[in-house]
Image 1 (cartoon, rainbow, N blue to C red):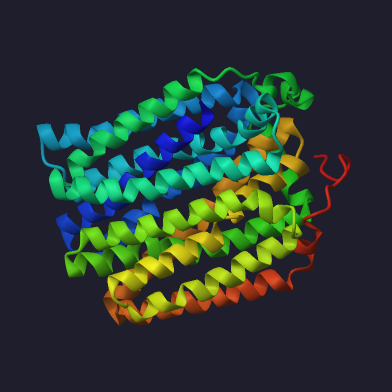
Image 2: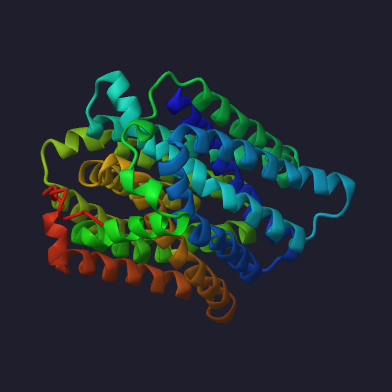
Length: 403
């Protein structure tokens, strides 16, 4: 049932990812406006993610997942409601998108935190469980943009939100029906009963900071997100919107997600043959080279091929990320560490999206895309140069991660 929820959420988010930028460009015709919206929807995650992690550790992973998906479904449904009773302006789109962004990190983090529970119930390894989880989530992302593009053509970007709302309800009910024991309740941090909510949240940051390898990886992921998200949320939508080709955007995003399916499902086999640092290095270098053909703004089929390669190379990263947290962080701290990491990841892309949106309008699409590609190469070189990341295969002792 966790994977049913996982796929439903992936499809729903895939639809939103293509429908909302398209809606903004229809309303304003401004890449800068699309970039600003992309930045604003990241801001709630910066603030709420650490506290969501504490909620996961305090009240349980399952409850947070259920409530978050219900609230996400309602927030998406409001797009349709406002459009029916009034005028869905750019301001309304911003407000509703930001509202939905408050709940999305909670469901995403809680489902990740449930992976060890599902793995134990199914008697499979963490590597296999994470590979399946991220692979199936990528399946949702692969299907979602294609469905979103089709819905934009058939009913428009606003009514496409009806499908997303239904899928979030499906995700909530699926977790509700899971037959597992929420290990958070069995291994609750004894210190949490003596700490207030803020102190318990800060403990998550201390636990992450104490693990140099995980902390360094978080910094790397921040840089990567700051470069990648503007490509997905600004550059590609602007390029295909100018061509009037919603299908091309959907095909590219579907190809990227399809590649991620292959890469994520391959993680279990890859992890048996290569060290964690070798996997990370291969991902970062490979992605830097895979993005290069897109810079020339080639025909759509080249975007599709390059997107698939980029997704396939990036695919092993998320299951690697999950496995590292689950194997290096105590169970009772995992929600908070996920929360702190999510906050860090939300912090970088808003700046990148605003800058890229303005750069596209001021300097041109291709010139801006070239700079983004160069930054990918810089991040890959940074990954290879950090000594702490070579320690990824070592599991720290409890004293090393004590807060």
